[in-house]
Length: 175
Image 1 (cartoon, rainbow, N blue to C red):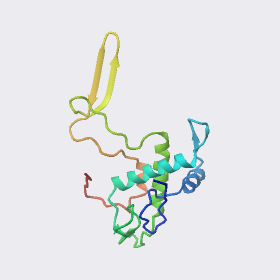
Image 2: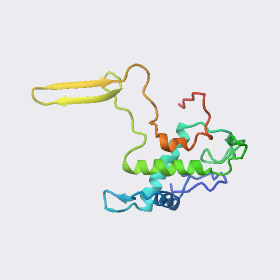
Image 3: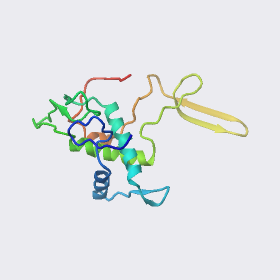
Image 4: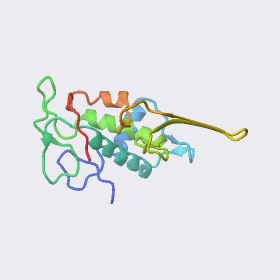
């Protein structure tokens, strides 16, 4: 599938909330280094677009946004209707807060996976740390204390941009 940035009209084939140029401009304004450590050259548009798709998917999977999808045929969660900021403004198209959050998460995706699968041992317990020693043989594992594994990592700086656009006080688990 080709990269298609959502333009705010509810495209049926979009798979990213921002363009590669938005990503470059956003991080350039903040003086961030966009050098690919694998090539020592700037990240290519293809790599940036792949990271944007992952970051956009992550956002749509993790959050329940205010309002409702504008069209039943749109591929992504934005644009939305009945989505209002606390001061009464309507959140039109793809809000800048969503775009900036995607830019932040896409940069994190370029340096490592933003939503890796948790690691479990043979007994299906979630491993939080593991230490092995070869001689004399030792092995130590640490597990989470009760509860289920966290389904999504938190990225407080990026996600703080969304505070007025997400439904809070409810727990939603997608299956």
